[in-house]
Structures are given as C-alpha cells and as structure tokens.
Image (cartoon, rainbow, N blue to C red; front, side):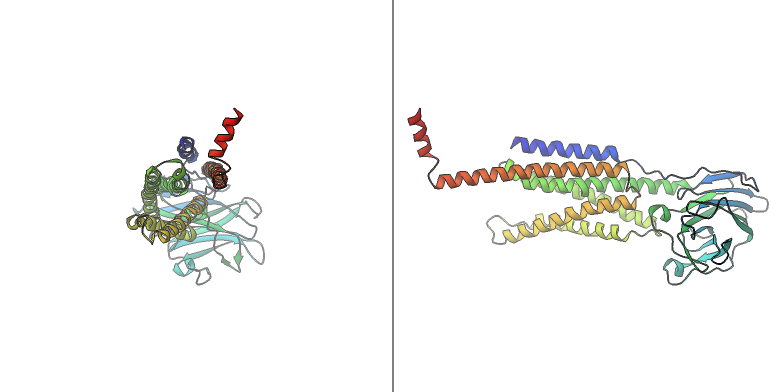
Length: 407
C-alpha cells in the first residue's frame, strides 16, 4: 500500500517537472530584413513575425510620403503573395492590399489592388480587383527567382499617408492558388493567422506591447491547461482507482477530491485566459479547440457540482450516482487530453519540445497505470483463489494441522 502511494506521488512530481522543463515560449522563425534592393535603398527595415516576411521603407515627414517594399515568398507555383495597409484597425477586414501572382494566361507576374471587406472574410463572394481608396502613387512587383515554391518576391509601393499619422497597420499573407484573377483563401495555420502588426514608420518601431501581452497570455494559457486538464485530472482519476485499495479509510477520497478540485480550479484560470485570448484576436477562429475546451469545462463543472449531491453509501440512488460520476469523469479526462494536443496544433507547437515533454509525461503516467492495473489484478486473482480454497476447506485449520504433523 505504501509503495502504491509513493509511486503515484513520485509520478505526479516527475510529470509536472518534465512538462515545466519542456515548455518554452514559441519564437517564430523569420527572415532577416534588408534595406537594399536591386533598384533602391531604404532608410529602415523590419522583420515581420511570420511567413519569413520583412518590410523596408523610407518616410518623408515633410510631405507624408512613404516609399516601401515588402519581401515575401510563394508557397506554390500558382500561388499568390499579398501585402497591404488597414487604415482603420489591426485586422484583415478593411485592408487595402496589393496582391501579386503569375498571370493565368501569360505566366508573367501581375500586381493588382484589392479591398478585403467582410464578404471576402466570410467567403460569400470571390475577391475581385478594384481601385484602392487610399492615395497610392505607384506600385510594382518583382521576383527574385522563378515563381515556384519558396521563391522570393518584392512588392514596391509609394503611398501618401495622412499627415502626422505615422502608425500604420500592416497585413500580409499568401495562398496556394488563384481562380482566374481572384486569390483564394489562405491557409489557416497559426503563422497565417498572425500576419498582422502595427509599426511607426517615423521611429521605425513596432507596436509590440499588445503582441508581447498576447504572447505571454498564450504561453501561460498553454502551460496551465496542459498541467491541469492534461496531467492533474488524469492523476486524480488514477488516485481514485488505485489508492482506494492502498489506503484505509477515507484518505483516498480526500486525495482524489483534492487533486481534482485543484486541477479544475487551475483549469478555470486557463479557461478564462483562453476566453481573453479570443477577445484579443477576433480574426482568429479555432473552432475545434474552442468547442473541446467548452465541453471539458462543462463536464468539469458537473463533476464539481456532483460532490454537493453525493448520496450516502446506504442510499438506493448511490449506484446511479457512481455510474454518472465515472462516465462524466472519464469523459472529462479524455476531452482534456485530446484538447491539449489540439492546443499544441493551434499554438504551432506540433513538433516542439513542449509537445515531446507532454507526450513523455503522459506516457509515464500511462505506464504507471498499466503497472498498477496489473498489480491490482494479481492481488484480486490471488485473493479470489484464497477465498475459493478457504470455502472448499483446503486452507485454514486443516493446513495448520497438516503442518504441525509434518513438523
């Protein structure tokens, strides 16, 4: 009994230790920025946080003119690359964009203007080229290699900004193919959904306060939920199944309830941070992750409320309550673990050390469960055999008597 309790305690500490070591803030891999092109040299440049993109520019405050070049890459031979400015907010909807792609007929590179309105975001209609309602003085695109997967592209533009308004919202993206002259929807990975930033063209700095807060919240959200829903809740279930046999009295119940309540209240914090992240990123939709999170949270709440309505052992409804408690509890554990893996996909950590650490933690817990389950069945079979022999009179007083005659 002591061995079982010690094993579960050591396992719990080991799993949390492995998980805390493996989680590191995700840093996107991006291109180095440059201020020099084949035709022009710019004053400032900045590496953008996704898609290996960057931007360079020269700003003239006396007439509010901005000369800029965007550096991007194609992801398919018939794909598109786009860059634009949103004059109202840091989001895709409302962006005035310049999108370049190979002409479907001639194969030559074309650059066309587009306005991204709500109908485009909801995919109610095709994205059609139309004149921009901002003061675009000139624009052109050049490719640094043949337009194939990974080929670099430059989109040059000269704009006249509103005087004394030097902060602009930059939006960029790329897609796999076009239909006629209509770019199709871009991929929806975390990198593609994070292609928005705000820069000050006068100082050359990025409005990183919001980005830093968002990145920190996302990291905390991932760690808390991985520990609570993905580690502590399964440990609580293991505690109920195996400590019941190892500890006398209600100690196993207090251990089980304590771990589960702590995990759930920790999960509430992670859930609340997830809601806040959704409010801070209205352009990003993670349907499956969100639905699984709500389902796990509701089941966890039902389990917590079930403690308030726990019938006594002599109550005739006790067996129904136990069936409900087991079903909802195991469903909550399964949904929590599945959603942790879904969270790794959403955060772009599908091949990270964080996911490896979580997999090692979960594998260790599963291994301990298998060992404890085998041990439980061995003890059960041994006791069943002893009970059978005792009923048949083969052990007990007759064994003792035969033992004394032989001595």
